[in-house]
Image (cartoon, rainbow, N blue to C red; front, side):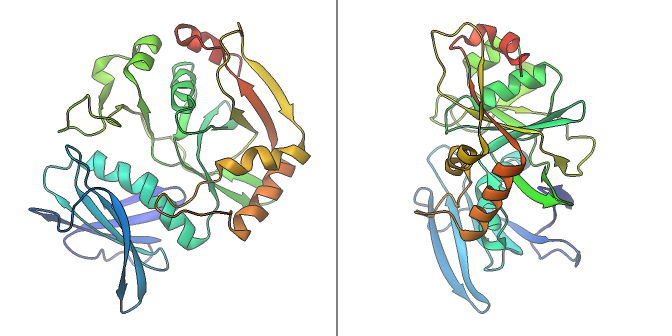
Amino acid sequence: MLRQLDGLTIARAEGRWPDEAAADIHWKHSIVDALPGADGSHAASEDRADGRWTVHVYAEAGCTHQRFAISPDGACVESQGIARTRDDELWGLMSEPVMRTLFRLRGIPSFHAASLSRGGRTILIAAEKGGGKSTLSAALVRGGWTLLSDDLTRVERIGGEWRAHAGYNQLKLHADSKAALGIGAAELGWRWHDADPRLPGNKLVWKLPEAPDLAPRRIDEIFVLQRRDPLLTAPRQHRVPAVHAMLALQPHLSCDPFLAETAPRRGDMAALLSLSAGVACTALTMPDDLQRLAEFAGAI
């Protein structure tokens, strides 16, 4: 199986290493009856002949049980998991937490941000975890925007312009967002299919069509989502001067989910400096009125 994700070609095979030599990432997945050492989600490392591999284990009670081992150069991924895990759950883990580690190992800059495109315009929406980024993105999709990625957006400077790569095209939403935006139940599923829907973190997932064109798109504007304001009756936008944009965007650089990184890497800071100088950055504050979010999103 070949798949394009974040500008990288991923070759995946079951029970063996894939043969596609030209792939950027080779992924071997095996099904096991039980996951050894599955005592909650955690990170570890293991020494192999080619160096130290990074290990992610996802084994929360009631959720999927998967183990990913990532090679030191970020070119190989070996995973094991229980049989009942659905393919979209597997790709959901690969495309976000595992991909963060792959980006770190390969020196690729990325942001904890959604990216969307419409009519030749591409935007990023950066926010703190739980800040409403996915809900606003869902409202924009309802308004005709195409989702390129949610949670993790890879950026790359190509031909003197900063561009966003298309990633995994799904949104994770709370039930109140689904109701307010009028998204039908048939369009949604649970993140962990076999788990109790009441389990913390088991959000609704809106799987969207893949972008028709996977070529990286020039970033026209980056919105930094602020805390919602109950006193506002319309969205408030404030252009952030380039001299301050770097500070506004730095907290949203993505990092390895299992590493306590205290400072951004040098390559990320160089990318951040160039990006903040070359792309418009806007602080966006939305009213705290979920029922009118689709209307408010039209102002973006």
